[in-house]
Length: 112
Image (cartoon, rainbow, N blue to C red; front, side, top):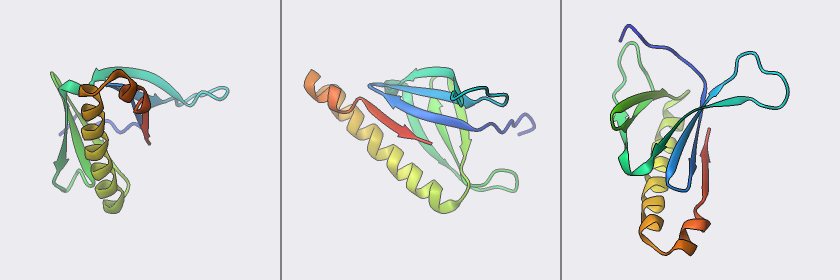
């Protein structure tokens, strides 16, 4: 727990991939976030993290072989975010097994 770095991020789901963007500290112009990584949804799991003295209102994204820990401002936002993530992942995986026309309709989901 010693190497914890807090950074503002944006998580965006595009088709069957999760894109993680980092907030730029010295921004010039309209670009606020910078691309960081892209993961396939097939290798992704969302896990609730119990509150400790150091970490509160957090959840983990288990993405083989990485683990990412995200912290949210309030318990209410955490519950709604986890619920939204579970729904979003199940719907996206459902469309992944359906026809190509259904895949286009679920092309973009965004969580800030």
